[in-house]
Length: 244
Ligand SMILES: [Zn+2]
Ligand SMILES: [Zn+2]
Image 1 (cartoon, rainbow, N blue to C red):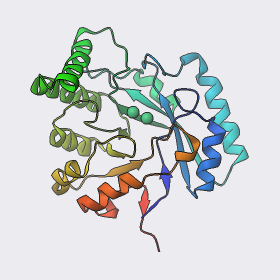
Image 2 (image 1 turned 120 degrees about the horizontal axis):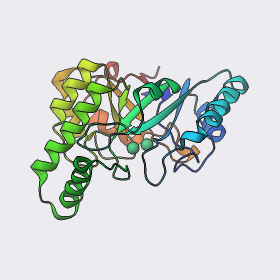
Image 3 (image 1 turned 60 degrees about the vertical axis):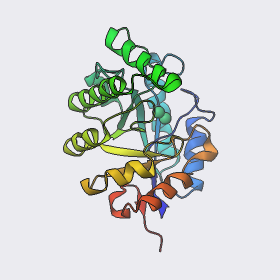
């Protein structure tokens, strides 16, 4: 199995270690035909990109496209699903500023809506004390479902990794909305067990490095291991090709 496109990578514009160009060069070295730069969305309290930097980021991408014409470079963002409100941290019209929009739930996302605070709190209580699992699951699931219904994004990042979710329900809506579920190298979910549980749904998946260092671009050994273990057909993984 060979990764042809890595659609999830971070740079120094958020919490990554390399520049956009470092990531592009690494992607070329690894033989990718497509790389997306997808730094954390505006609402991430620690690492979110700044709205004022967008023109500069876009200009940098356009320069890189000219300099490296043999690879397709996409300007993306990993938007934050704020919590059970199902709001993303970018406006619908802002989505058009990007070539690709990913979205996922992160603890670091800041929201002033009470329902989002409650979602964060419940996930912490579940993570550290193992309590309120069902309530957390209901809130997380609601937020993701609403976000998928409201915003036309492409990839749901690491579903179920930061808090419990009703994965089957999310997967069914994702399929209907044409959103791919991500198998993320850095995060445990989707796990092999998750993939087995979803096997009958015939979903489309994306495998991502979620690289935070240039040398991790296109490195997805654990994700591939999970795919093998769960027996997911390569035809269901959008950015993987069978090796000759
Ligand atoms: Zn993430
Ligand atoms: Zn990420």
